[in-house]
Length: 352
Image (tube, rainbow, N blue to C red; front, side, top):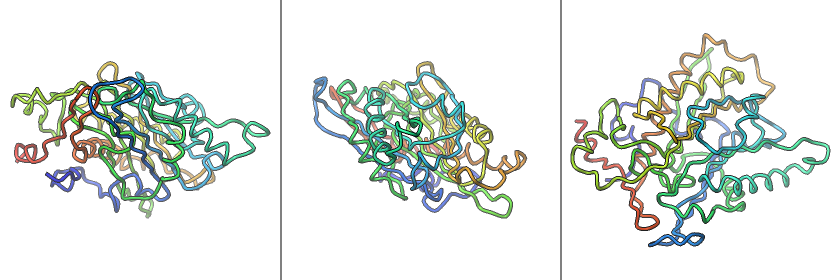
């Protein structure tokens, strides 16, 4: 069956209206770029392949992030992760670099690429200006990928930044999502957005998910225990082993403080719960929320106006995770490891 979004299959994704493309780039100014690395077949030869990995770059706005930082808040759902830049955001409530997503052992290679990019863009760094705080998140794609080969290079990060563009956004087995598995099926990149009316304006909230967690029996779709039904249908032979992790990156054009952005990020686990995720031990899970309105914005919204934003975060977290399943295609990786795509037709039949 054609790979398409969960919403386009007729599934209920929540009450709030989505944006134009129903992805994170519906937030004005947000740009996303992917570099997908797929090479080789057969037995694992460390350092050679097979390669099933990539990198995804997120730019909150088209300008210079070092000179035009954004307010940000981060919530650590499960701290079993190897990401860069989390303490600085927790301390200052600021984001002054683009965001990279990649595999666990390529975090530092990706960071080198971002550093080269920022140094070229900002010659004052290291002279009469402070150094930037790089932000790189990761998931473990070692079930399908020669992860020890560290095939993501600094120039792949620079290429992803240069490719960053407005939507519609490619989802599924792209960028950092190439080698990822979700609920022991194929996962990857998923995204969704919502329009939130407030104070006579329509604000956008968008989410991008990198999914790589969960056991099949955990999986829920619209409250239906589809994963358990699949397991009882004697399809255990199709299951891959999931190392774990979920990265959520949210963007909004609403004028929110760093404290309020942290409050939004803290609602993401409720959306994760809608999909059946339980934050198993060893699964590193983070949610970063960013307002790209700049530091010189009008007074932030009142806390009492945040409820619709909380609902938006819960809805787009769940829909982004589901979309990563619905868009992803089956993939064979190292040592003939197979990660099967969600059988959409069967799922829709079971759900009636």
